[in-house]
Amino acid sequence: MAAPYATDPANPRGRLYPEEESFFRSPFQRDRDRIIHASAFRRLKHKTQVFIEHEGDYFRTRLTHSIEVAQVARTVAAALDLNVELTEAVALAHDLGHTPFGHTGEEALDALMQPYGGFDHNAQALHIVTSLERHYAEWDGLNLTWETLEGIAKHNGPVTGDIPYALAAYNARHDLELDTHASAEAQAAALADDIAYNNHDLHDGLRAELFSTDELAELPILRECFARVDAKYPGLNYYRRRHEALRRFFGVLVEDVITVSRRNLAEYAPATVHDIRHAGRMMIQFSPELWTDLKVIRQFLFERMYRAPAVVEMRVVVTQMINDLFPFFLENTGELPKQWRKDVEEAPDQTTLARIVADYIAGMTDRFAIQEHKRLIGGAEVPSGVIDGN
Image (cartoon, rainbow, N blue to C red; front, side, top):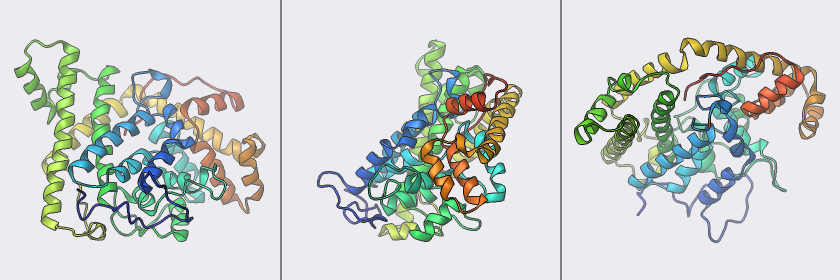
C-alpha cells in the first residue's frame, strides 16, 4: 500500500498538452516507456560514464549507469512505499542531457556557451524531453507528466538563483515550482544516482587497474566489508573476494538510505506529497556518518581515477574537440543535418543560433563526436584513458 506522501498515479497534475490516458498503463508508466523509447535514451549507450565509450565492453556507459540507477531507485521507492513507476521514470531520464565525454565535455560546452547563457546537463535533460525529441504529431518533446518533469528538473533540490536558460524557458510555460523540493520519488532517484556511481566507479577503477584491491580495503566502509568477506570466505579467489566486498558496500549504502529516510519520514510525518515538497529539506538522505565516509571514498576516486596524471592528456584532447566543433558549426551551419538547418533558418539572433549548435553537439555520442571532428577538422586520435567522474 502506498504511503500518504507518495505520488498518486490516479491523480497526476497533468501534461502540458492534454491527452487521453491509457486504460492499461498508469501515467508514470507511460512516461517511463516514452523515455526508454526516446532517441536520447538510446544514445546514452555510446556516451561516457567514466571511460570513453570505445575503451572496453565491460566499463559503464551512461546507459548502463542509468539502468543501474533505476534498479536502486526502484528498491528504495518500494521499501519506502513510494510510487515505483515515477521513481523509475525520473531515474532513467536523469542523465539524458549529458554531452559526449561526460563532465569534461559539459565543462567545455558550458565555457563556450557563457556568452549565451551557459550549459547545464540537468536543464538539458528537461529541454530534451520537452522540445528536442520531435517524433509526435501534436507536440514537440515527450509530453511527460508534471511530476516526472518536476523530478527531472529538481531531483537534487530546489533550483533558485541563476536558473539555467533551458530550464527557465520551459518553466515560464509550465510552472514546475522550482523553489520547492521535488517529490520523495525524485529524491529517491537522486540518492540512487549517488549509490550507483559510488559503487560502479570502484568496480571500473579496479578493472582498469588504476588502484588495487588492497588500497580499497583500507578505505572507510570498505574496510569492514572486506573483513566480513575474509571472515566468511578465508582464502577466497582474488576476483571473487573483491566482488563480494563491493556487493556488501553496495548493500550498506542502500540500507543506510532506507533506514535514515524511514526515520526522517516518521519524524516529519508528511500527510501528502505537498508536505514533502514544502518540508524545507530532503527527506531521502544518507546518514551524516556514512556521508562523511563517502566523501573520503570520493576524494580517493578523484585523486586516483578522475585526475590521475595519465588522464590529463585525455581531458585536453576531448576538450579541444568540443572547442573546435562549436565555432565550426556556428560558422558552417550547412554542415548541420537537414532537420537542424530548419531551426537555424528561423533563428532570430546569434544567441538562438548558439543554443541550436550547443543542442546538436550535446546530443552527440562519444564516437560520433570523434568521427565528426576527424571528418570536419582533422587532428590527433583520442588516447586511451579515463576522462571523468560520476
